[in-house]
Image (tube, rainbow, N blue to C red; front, side, top):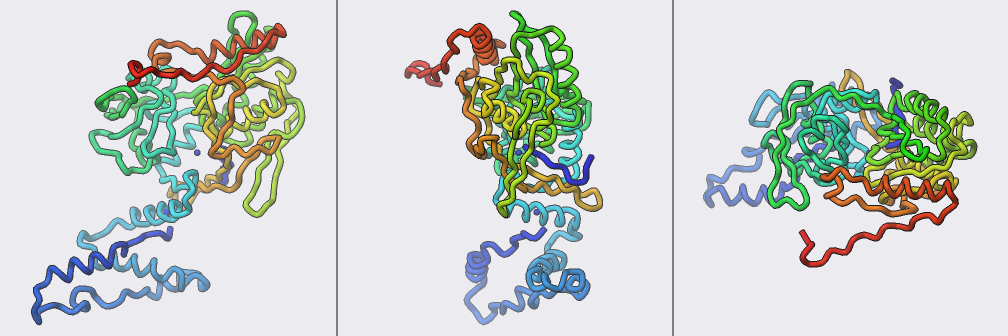
Length: 435
């Protein structure tokens, strides 16, 4: 694993200890009797905090004035906090977390050691947990899609379920990435997940036994009428290898066309997205990487693809993010594929995962925005499908897949030179149909 991991996916000096000091002083003043016995502030608070000489010398000279309040706050906690001794490791991790959060970028955050380990393992195709793709960007951790055959699927979790409690602990106000770390855990252990589900009047509880989850990142099979189907679940260490093996097997069967399923694929490595795109695009720019200082890098097709001529339809939805959008966006720009499904997630940024010293996790930092070959910026916008098809909640329950059905119909129309289906209208609910 490279020390700097370039991800196309989604705290040290920011402890605020004095918020509300004025209102706190007002309350304190009213608690003391109006007599000469009122203590002076020096009796309530010790003398002004100072920075120890070793702290001063450990801070670079040009940063000593800037960091003085941090060390003062650190010393206040160590000398005045009621519960001693304090946990220095927790304070250090909290400081890093606060610094990352202060940037205001939802894709930039501190990955504690446990989260970093699980994230790197999942991109390697294996981890321990319940087996579900999740969305970290909302108020609550949200299930995007349970992995087929996983404990999450067997327990009955549905796309769109919002995790509101873990083992009875309310998750309101808890950052989604922290909630995810609570869901993950050793194989064989259990976790109780409480979710809020649209259409259900009360929260639902699921007791799930964690397992070792093995993710096959790319698989293929033949459908009826000579159509090849490729399902790409993530962009990890094994994706390119698995995809090339699947394509070799499928292309030997002379398919008439191909469906690439990128639904609920949260992304992964940028270089893997370029390799995957190159299997379907013979030449040309796959994406641009735009830095804050105006510099721009471009990534081109590798020229070794196995399926650069075959008609293609790509399935996307709101869970298709990052590397998935790089592939889908390039195929759409070159008119190599027709996109079917729903608007994609809209993660048009690139992150570095920079491991920190002493196995203390990693800093995940946004380093650039990316653009499609036609220089479309999709961050917080997403890709619009050429043919919009919605999945209704009852489709998941009945195991129906209208998006795949339309993709097959569309591909057959392209192969036969027939008119391509138009977008499926969003259903209009009458008052009696409203939930």
